[in-house]
Length: 268
Image 1: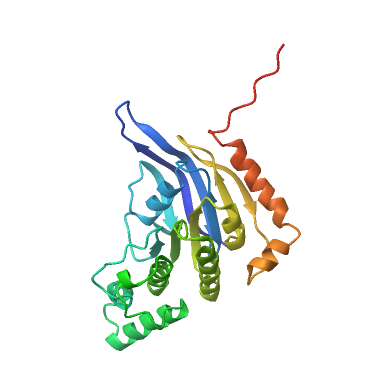
Image 2: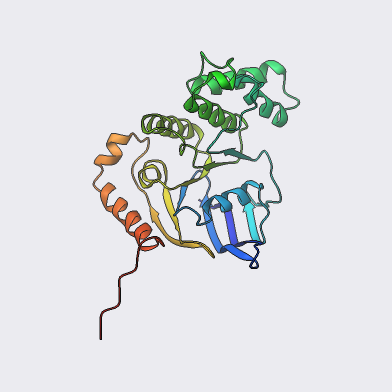
């Protein structure tokens, strides 16, 4: 497959009292169409900054980002974003929160078609009986389902997921990981997900990209995840390569853990 997303020499510098701080430096990444990539690294390494720049929500300092042959400048409906907190409008039902985005990307479609599309994705995500509830009436996991449905309903060229399950309890997180990968498998949108969870990255992704620590973070290493699809958690964990890949990821993270004291040099 040809390259679908290309990021070249991405740099992001923030001002500080002591002068400019370069959080991300010379970050390069290419993705194939339909590929699911997990971006992993320690907190503060700049992975969410990279995702936010690709989404057009944060301005880059320098570098080039091309999606489907078009250089990205600013935000747009060609990228569906799922945040850690779904940011639903509290005065709108789950249905209307999703419909709001659909109306923006399908302004000329008949209202019945738009409503059917919204209902389809909310039903697919498991909210058929709750789509007309207000966000305050929904659990955190249900609100995140609405956020996922909203992103898919926009029919974007690419999905961007910023630790979408980071605020959920373990059982809900496992359940929604399966919901996400089953939904993604239907049309295999190109997807870039930020996570700090090794097991989540291995379960969902085709490739895991590991970032070095900031400041001046960049791609440190990449591993291919070749578990067959469609996936379920039991089969993935029983795959003969699972623990080998898991150990590689953990070893990289431990090597780049700035909180971990370095071994003293041997005495002469």
